[in-house]
Image 1 (cartoon, rainbow, N blue to C red):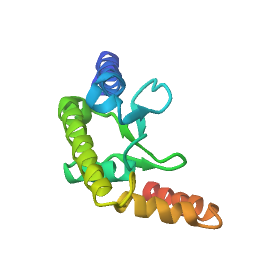
Image 2: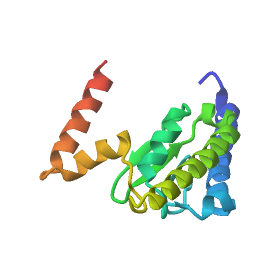
Image 3: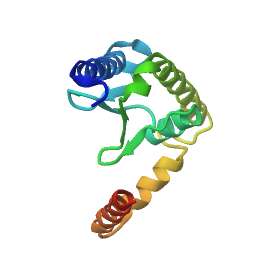
Image 4: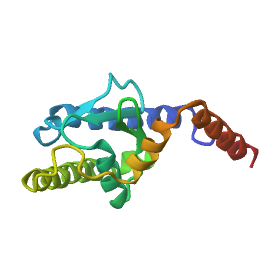
Length: 157
């Protein structure tokens, strides 16, 4: 209410613009497009991507170590960036860190291959452990129940 309609519209333009910048960079920049794939056609403020060559959960963990907390997804394994005004202010830093993380993970993958540990997935990070457990439950409704309980508790506070 305090920013008014024009402030709200300005914020929306900035958020959508930053999301489009992230999407186009992943799709077009050679250092990212060869390894990452944008999921679908992001319309507003969320950009999800996966990797054809790297463990996407290792990428999420590496981004966390740089201060970015991207959301891990499963089926298919992916990560997404929820663009907010703080992300808008640091979008170039986020993209730079993503480029660096992809390069670091590519180097780790090259080392794994040289050591004979196989391609794509010699390491499993924290995000992979969480989603591995959730994905292996015989009854996935448990995950839904836990999420519902978490959200109920969150909104009661």
